[in-house]
Image 1 (cartoon, rainbow, N blue to C red):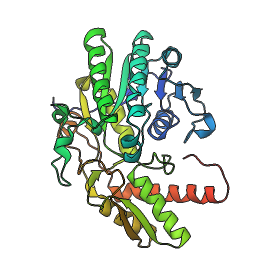
Image 2: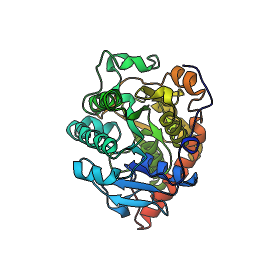
Image 3: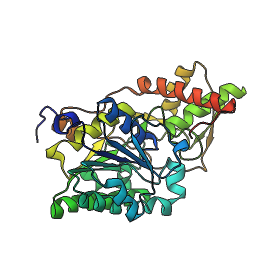
Image 4: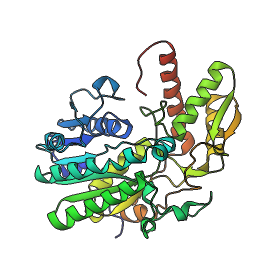
Amino acid sequence: MTAEKPKRIEDVRNKDDLLVVTGAGGFIGGSLVRYFSDKGFRRIRAVDKKPLDEWYRRTPGVEDLVLDVSLRDNCARACAGAAEVYNLAADMGGMGFIERYRVECLRSVLINTHMIEAAEKAGADRYFFSSSACAYNVDLQKGARSRALKESDAYPANAERGYGWEKLFSEIVCQEYRAERGLKTAIARFHNVYGPYGTWDGGREKAPAALCRKVVEAGDNGSYAVEIWGDGTRTRSFMWIGDCLEGIDMIMHCDGLVATPINLGSSELVSINELLAIIEDIAGYKVERRYDLSQPQGVGGRNSDNTMIKRVLGWEPSTPLRTGLAPTFAWIAEQYAARKAGKKVAL
C-alpha cells in the first residue's frame, strides 16, 4: 500500500447520512460528535449510558440517546438507519482503573459484540472500532526505552490482562464481520489520547489530565507537591485529541485499511517526569515530586511505530505534546476553579 490523498468523510458521505457515535458522553466520542457537526453533517446520533447532565460535552442539533449499549436491544435502537457507526463505548480509564477493574474492562466485549451485529443488521456501510495499544504483547514493553510498537507486534498474543485482551478479541470480531458478512470495518489502536473535555478527576483519568490537575491543586493549596505513581521513569507517547479525530476520519474512509488494525498515536516518547516538567513550564511554577511505588504503573515503556500510517495515509499525529498540553492545562484549571466555586462539572 502506498500513500494516496486520504479521503475524509465529506468525500464519501452525504451530509444527511445518519452517523452514530457511541461513548458520546465521554472524551473522544463527544469530541468526534462535535467534529462531524462542524463539518456540516446534519444527522448525528450520540449515544452514552451516562445521564445527559454527566456528558462531557453536548453538541446542539444532535440526537442524544441515553442507552447502555452492552445490551443487545439498545444496540439495535442505536444503530437503526445508520450509514456509519463509530463504537467508542467502553468501560475504561487510566492505569489505575484498568489494572484494578479487569472484569469491568473485559465486559466491554459485550458492547462491541452487540454493536457490530446491530450495525450489520441495520445495513450500515462502515463500522469503526476503537482498539488500544494495550492489545500489544507486554513482553515487548518491559523497558522504558523499548522500541516503538508496530502493528504486527500484537502477535504472538500476550496483551495486558483484562482491557488489552478484550480489545484484541474485538479486533478479530471486526475482521470476521468483514470476511463473512462484508461489513467494512475500521480498527484503530489508540495510544493515550489527551485534551480538553476529558476525564480529569475521579479515578479514571489518564496521566496528562491527572498531572495537570495535581499541579493545579498543588498551586491552589500552597503545597507545591504532587504524587507520582512509580518513579517517573516509565515512558509513553500521548496523542492530541485533534490528531485523533482526524486519524479516525481517514482510517474509517480508507478502503486499503478495511479490517486492518493500525496504530493511531504520537511517536513523541516522554517519561512521566518529562511530562510533568512540561506541565510545570505551562503552569509557571515547580512542584516537589513525591513518588509512590505502590500504585499501578503499567508497562515500562510504550510508543507508536507510525511507519504504516505514514505509508498508507501519508500522515501521522504530529501535534507536539507541549502544544496540546497548554489548552488542556487551561481547561482543567477552569474546571477545578468551577468545582471549587460550587458549580457542577463533568469528571
